Image 1 (cartoon, rainbow, N blue to C red):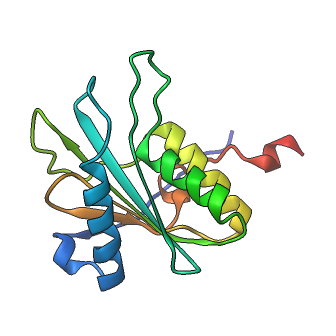
Image 2: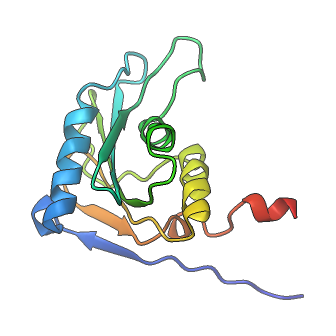
Length: 161
């Protein structure tokens, strides 16, 4: 028998003001985009903003549907749009923010499992890590230097070899 220990490391910022200026701007776009989320069923709104190597920014917000689970998360809306519009451009960073109409989200809220898998595909294809910043509506911001910090045992194209 062999034992495997997996560790993840995160940077924790006390608030937006501690982030690098370009990431503050990116998170601000995610916050603005979050406000336009279509979430009449969960009342849980998520916004995502992706900074690309060509300096373009692509945004997305969650889109719910009465026919669950036909909706789509903000992260996947943004990353698929980036892939469709700029297929050869590397992703430099992703900012994610989530809020609830029912309570204040003050803890950092990471991407769900499906979004982690979608981000993994892009990180693997571009052969470089994607820093991911995430927060609630207010409070601390967490950063993972790579999707592998959030999903250490990836299921990827190498599993088909």
